[in-house]
Image 1 (cartoon, rainbow, N blue to C red):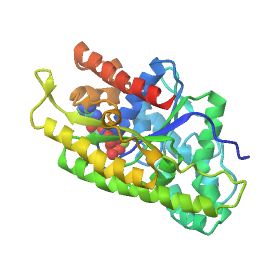
Image 2: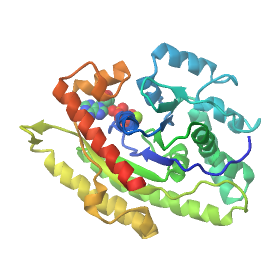
Image 3: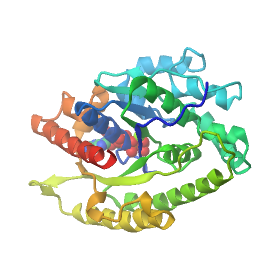
Image 4: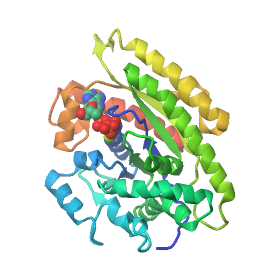
Length: 332
Ligand SMILES: Nc1ncnc2c1ncn2[C@@H]1O[C@H](COP(=O)(O)OP(=O)(O)OP(=O)(O)O)[C@@H](O)[C@H]1O
Ligand SMILES: [Mg+2]
């Protein structure tokens, strides 16, 4: 497979190494909101847990895909990346899967993405030594996205990331034009913001060194993930207001986003984050209780689930559309 130039689609990761903060749920629902506004969206399940794929695809179908992903007829990300990991050839192009959500497609995840992730550790070191295997391997997923975006005229790519700061998330973030931080209203989630900001800053500065060392004429990750904003999650509402106890977490999240993410990134490069606090909040998603779980079981966005009350579904639609509109405004 030849190298192609980077496609114009905006690549965005919902990123927080703290688990269970709503990354996968947000990914599906923001994608559906963008698609309802006419945008073509590609979802990339880059988490070896495959939660995004499980959300959208029936269990027996996913089981078959995982059983067959070693073959060249396979459909998962592992099928595409296997020749790179096993050093048997070039990236194998796969087609994205159609979903029940119009204008949204999926590159299915695979538990064997963890094999790719293991290789990425060595590939990263190879990059510092200007070795082609490292430079090609670290950008393999990015190249696959280029092909799929070009073939399907994609406007937005959303990577669903696993909850860690491992080598797979590193190449994903370095491939993204933007990242969004979902933060739950609890103490551990707020503490995690410090590691998140420092980790990203280290990844970007390491990549800038690799980029300087790399030979000319090779497709490289852009290494410029800009902070698009944060989304507080999992808070409760009482009588139309954020319930007491949760509002203190909301202001702590805002404060720590400013000090632990924005300030740290701006030290590396002021273009990586806006200093405007009001710009940084993309929206907020309250605790939707069983509606969230039911929507996963039914494989549909919250607003289309046969669960909860009509009022809850309407609130969900409005909340995700608000975020989608801000994403469009800030990326176009
Ligand atoms: N707004 C919400 N209201 C209620 N429950 C929610 C909401 N968002 C997500 N959940 C529930 O919280 C759990 C974790 O959500 P999700 O899987 O989206 O998080 P995640 O950050 O992707 O997790 P991981 O770190 O494991 O990838 C799920 O059971 C989901 O149904
Ligand atoms: Mg997830």
